[in-house]
Length: 85
Image (cartoon, rainbow, N blue to C red; front, side, top):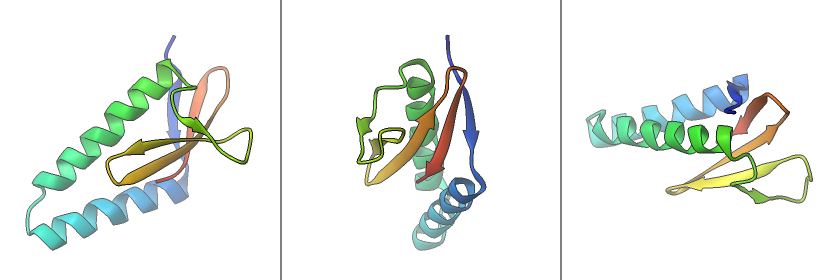
């Protein structure tokens, strides 16, 4: 069963900054939309397979690489908490 994905305020801000940076740098939203889709696809997989990401020095936190970025997250029985991007 897929877990519910919950973005922390910090992770939401980081995601927005990343997507805004690429939109401004490229003068187009095309890459930002692709990157956002990659984030969402990775999180859909993590929601079903929570151990998909690598373990970190914190035993409760895992990391999944998405392109040049990394999604740091922790899971509970019913949720995935996105901590940082």
